[in-house]
Amino acid sequence: MEGSAPDSVGTAASWLRCYRCWSQNLEVQVHYEGILKVDPGSGDAVDPVEEVQEAVVQCLDCLHDQPHLNLQFFEEDGRRVSRVEAVDDRWERMVAGTPWVASCTVTVDADQVESCSGPDAAESLAYAAFGDHGTREFFTHVRFHKHDSEEIVIHMLVELYARSGEEATEVMENAARGVLAITSLAEESRPPASKGTDDPH
Image (tube, rainbow, N blue to C red; front, side):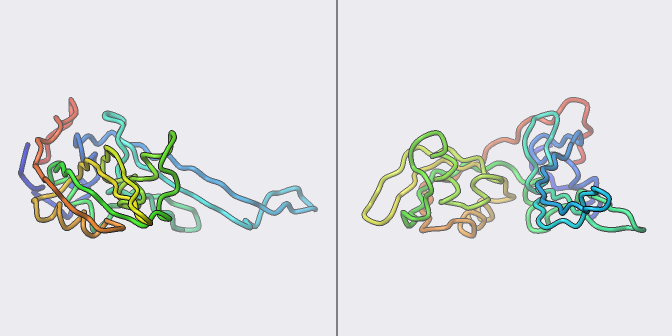
């Protein structure tokens, strides 16, 4: 199972699976917020003034979110259809790759950090360091941070999926929202596949 790439990268079977355990037992959690106008004649709530819809694909076997998958909404034959699709710049790296663990620091402007103490500090620091990657795609562990004048130096361990050390480094460099320094980078073994799932590799 380790180290081999998908045989058929162009098919949905290649990417419509958990990137960690390769299970196809997935669900989509849709969160919707909306403000609708009320029709005074009928009482119908129509004509959205404002709508926010967010969807997260999750594996039901290992309970991890799947940042390489998105839910797309579109009209088809007069009805609203939703379909899970792969994120082009991410799915091959995450499904065919292995976990890499980096020890690193990211130095950011202090005003990029919303909170550096309390229960939200770790997520806030991870977001300041790597943006959405730090809170959705990477597994981050903030070890500690230091204030240095108008900057904050965030020391962390980061796990991400990549097909090589070079690709892992490139992904982190592209995601970093400040000055990145990687002190170590090591490949880990892939978590075991979920029970009852055929190995596509």
